Image (cartoon, rainbow, N blue to C red):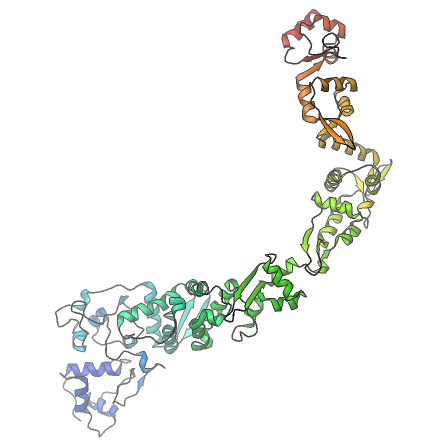
Length: 607
């Protein structure tokens, strides 16, 4: 075997087919012609090639394999379909530095140069002719175009994926996705790109991993960019893909049917443990967005995902709560219980509900008290308990008991906590004076619901002294009798919006007959109401305040001036509004606006 005249040496890890093309080009042959000249069928192929290089020891070549040449190459676990065959890709900047084809460029999913961060070329940008080995190595097309003049920068996500691919040909690479890392080989990385590049299509994806014309750079750029997008914005971009599937089939409760090809990709085609991060992100999405049911038939899901998923079918919820399935279905149809309704392929309705929400709607009997039990714990009658609920002193949950009828439920903690708050502010003893228990006052003092509510709120704030034993109830609260009477009188005076004529007379310090006269003359506005078959007049407090601000009696004016009523009457030049000599009234009244300050000062000076 004679050595070749020109013997460019192979670069370690260079593809065998690329080196043979480069060797043949240097000697003026095509690769097939050169090998037919070298191989006479007498020696092993490795010895033939080594002899052509004058005995040079061959390095380890990379894939793909060359048909008809029995020289071992490193395939990195890849299939023949993972390499380009008829086309060549190259980086013009790399060729300028060293004229040989890098092994990563033979991968169909390699579309950019990770070193110079530019897109690879496949054809001449001017004449669109496929690059021959001679044109590539010389850096110029036959049309005269220089390849380095047509550089297209790559995106960050494309560069990130290219760096992983190039590094995986030397050793395993670490894919970092936030807090998740995965150690991948070249074969695993390429396979992941093949199967996930089209997930962004959403429900239109039908045959993942079966990509046509991927050897064309334009097709590879488009498809590989999809996988790079998912990796660059993990897991948000992947979750966005999943949302497309859910929105496309809102009435379907089957995970397999809704997610279709995507489900097959992450649970079957990429079933190895190294791809677990895909399944974790998918199941995390289901926990928050899947309205259907996850149960034991989803054997490929983690047990935690099935247990943590809140939505359950009616049959499961019925067994868990003891409420019948038909009852739960009625609750959903009547909008008492929020539920998710689906229609299956056989027109059968499937309903799922949030089991945690149902637990709040149907309380645990151990945590709640009914009306009778709550009244017994507080030590009051049920009528008084209803008044406390109506005035907001005690909180109650008016929840339906779907097995019987609607009823009030009281949280045990709410009832016991209310008593405990009263015990904390209660005094150990009261001064030695007549006392009265709350139960007695409620029974004989005509304390209404609003007064009871105000009294208990005042007691909780410690503004009125009382005693309560450690195990005592509301009926055992004891007040100072005089203090409680004063508090009730003051509260009623401030809270009642209207008073009777006798009460108005006491407030105005007038006789009842005078007040009746004022009402008859419309100087004091009163309402006529019917009570127990009798007509009564009642005067609003606002009317009393207006009367005080507008009128003043001669007696009150004389007391202010420290004069007798007769002397003041003779000195005033102002005519009264009413009085004995005006309209026969029992008492003289003046308008305050008519009594100017200078008149009163003149009276004081003359006196």
